[in-house]
Image (tube, rainbow, N blue to C red):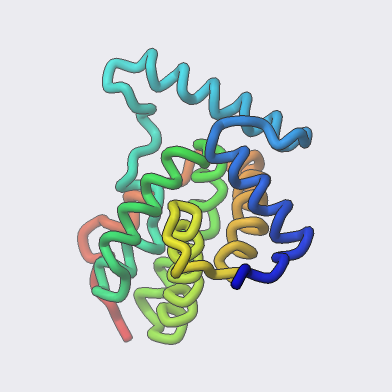
Length: 180
């Protein structure tokens, strides 16, 4: 038996992510701009002595998932594949925009079990979608696809409006104490 037709919206998202994953443009102006920005970042990374830009590494990009792993609520395998996805597909501008709203979220998660449970659900849906994009058909998650389709452009827009965020402040002395 074959799967039912996923519909034009799902096909468009799959086409977009396929183009995004391969580094090709999806034909849209945003796709072309994102492709150009990724190429510039790759050139900067090659030019740097460490082979990686100084402002982003896999450990400083995923603050919500990092907090969930720290609390023992998120799988390390999903964390690693998510970090690889971010490095391969998102720009520094995306990460900057993500940090603008995610740093206060992590502080809230440390104070509230409800907030932690809410963001865990969202993070798991996104992780399932990323696993699906990586080839694990059993982890298809349409909610995760929607989160990526809306969240990535939103983070990109926010990243254009804000400066670099100090994610290290989450890990200063005393900030890991969870008061519930």
